[in-house]
Length: 192
Image (cartoon, rainbow, N blue to C red):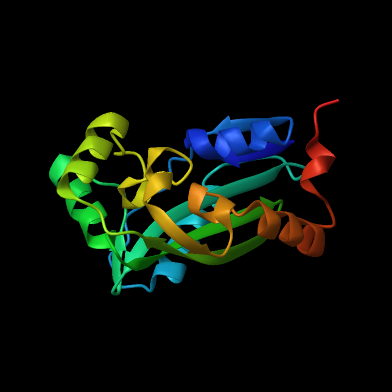
């Protein structure tokens, strides 16, 4: 069985879009990181913790992921309130930031983790646009306070890398890793 260790509606939508037969479970992994890590190592650590926190049978394939946004060596997770969301979006205005998503795959005793980075450039934004966006979308469950597939897509001037990575799960890289490391594909779990 394919298990998606995520409470993210966007990751679930991606699996649904592919027509996969899977179970979505929430991992109770500790997401506290006290040491200073580079963004790629940060998300890899959390994704692997999430995947390994779920117990499963040897035949189950567990996929977990974690996403952060980084700008000038600062990691932007999910905003805690309006002011935090406004601070984040303002920081990205007229600049290029990186979105890092790591996915972890666990099957039996074997595990694999990989981080993918995508550069996203926002056009210059007004305070009014940022205010409207936050009030309309309430992006408090999104790393960096935005969802590229939603209203914030109008902020994006340019993207360099995998679009799905910015949404929260780089499907191409996940499929490649499943084939190479485990000899299976996502479509092995297609609904019949």
